[in-house]
Image 1 (cartoon, rainbow, N blue to C red):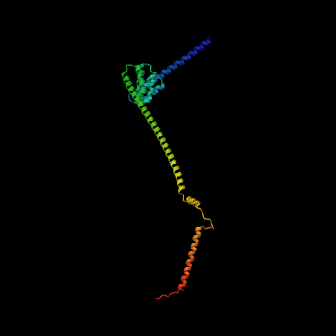
Image 2: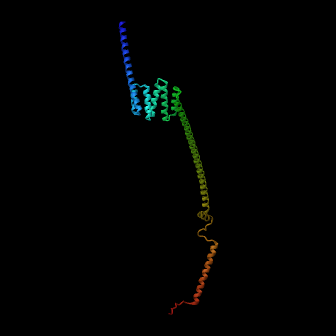
Image 3: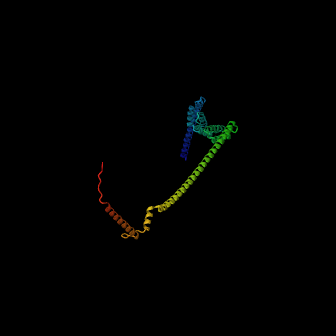
Length: 275
């Protein structure tokens, strides 16, 4: 029994010693953090914002939830125009602050940094949170009114832009449909014209065929030859026989006449020229 009690007492002593040492280390770190914050404040007063930011970061390395260090770091970054980097420092300070006044200041500066980045909705929310912790701050109330005005303008501009985009999209859609209908109509007209041309071509071809058939002289000659009776070979018609007999009689008369003329005149003598 005594042995167990001695072990328990020894354990409690060790635990207490560890706790005391941890507390001493924590207090030592806090002192170092406060020292770095004071150095940062001196640099901040000299407008050496970059060097001040380094000092505040070192303070946060010693004590990560040191709200004064995070708040002052946010201010140094803000003065250096690093508004986006300042925003999370103000958020951290507002979260870890132990009193309402410090929270109100952190939210006020958070709203200012968001105004600089044109995050008007975030600025409005931040100023409202600041006024919840300090309702009597007229400067915050004024900033809230300005942020709300910018937010309304932004919403109206976004609405106008959306309406313009919708109108452009609608106009484009109507134009596309109109062009589509126009192309379809032109296609139908071309098809009708082509069909009409084909019909005219067929009619012309049929007309040409009839015309050719009517005006083909070879076919007409063949038809006439076919219709006209051909004389049989080796046979003469009575009229041809009559004409032949008359021709023979005439030839005979001419021959007889010539013979009678020769008997009367005698022999023809060749006559010499007198020169």
